[in-house]
Each structure stands twice: as C-alpha cells, then as structure tokens.
Length: 244
Image (tube, rainbow, N blue to C red; front, side, top):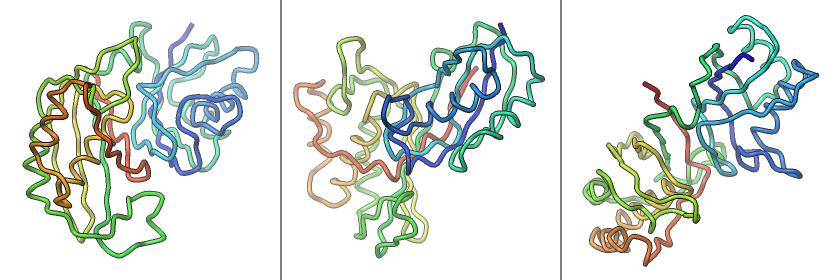
C-alpha cells in the first residue's frame, strides 16, 4: 500500500462541512468521488487533519489516503484535480511513510477569521463576516491574551464524552486593514466551534457589550458556564496545518 498526502484548498460556501454525509454535499465526499474515478477497484477513505463546518473555508487543509495504485507522487495532484468540482483544488501531493497521519501527526493549526466593519458588501458575504459596525480593537487585543497558554476550553467549544477540551493557544493576533479585521489563532489543536466561540466573545468585548472579565470567568468555569457568542462560519478559514 502507498500512503498519499495532499494539501487541498476549498471554498466552503456550498458545502455542508468537510466530513462526508449521506445526503449532503461535503468536501470529503467530492474528493473521495474523484479518487474513486482513479482507483476504481478500491474503496478509498481519506483522513483529514480535522473537520471544518458548513460554509467554513480551507486554505491549506491536509488529508491522506492509502492505495494500491502506483502513480508518481506529483501526478496525484493532476489526476485528482481532473475530477474535482471548481470549488476544490489540490495544491500538492506527495508519497509519505505509513507512520504519517494527517490528524495525529499535526503539531499546530492556524485559523484566520475575517470581519468587515464597513458597509455591507454582497460580494464578500460568503467570505468575510459582514458585521458593519466599528469595534474597539485594543479592547479585543487585550481580552485575546486571556486565551493564550494551556487552558480547559470546555466553555468555548462543543465537547463530547470521548475527549477533553484542554488545548494550548500559542498566539492570537488581531489586525485591521481598510476596515477588514483579521483574527489569527495559532494553537496545538481546536475543538469543535472553539475558534468561533472565542472570536464571538472577542467581538462582544470590542462592541463593549461584555467585559474581558466576563470572558475570563467563562474560561475559568471549565464548562460549567458556556459562551453563548458564536461567530458566523462564513469568515472562518483553516489557514495552515503544521507538521514536524
């Protein structure tokens, strides 16, 4: 068997998330259909670095799969792209060793979230959250530092019985250019909705509806109290997955 690693970019606007679903259009479903056209006698299942939700975009998502088909590593990119729809594109392909795993070998992930403080722009609506009002960036930057370090993020994510919410965030940057605010979050991993809840809370601080101390109390409650602010999915991008 050969293990193939791919880096993929996709516009999440028309997808019901990454993970395959029986009746909905998903990124995984489209990629597996494409690979099936190449490896017709095999049931190929791809394994991604993580799942993205409906309408969330991928800039450098990573997945791998195992196959008996022998194709030069860079030819996989061309072959898979040939059968993919226009809103998914394989950026790179390579043969890796069997101890590589797209999810478990990842050491860091980087997410970006984009927000528009300007007037509503219909051409950006699928790619930048159309907030349409000013925010206090300094208040948000100050509050963002609460989340840096190792914490139990149970109050800021959807947790299941199979895993804890202890994660390490290395850095949160908030920048602005021409009214477009970019939140950049770098950490060793993120639970479901974690980025959107953190950004949603920071937006509320920037709008002066809640305080930094309120976010701190939520964080320290370790799930006893939940963050009810969740940023919309359209502005979220899985920007990079890092491996050693």
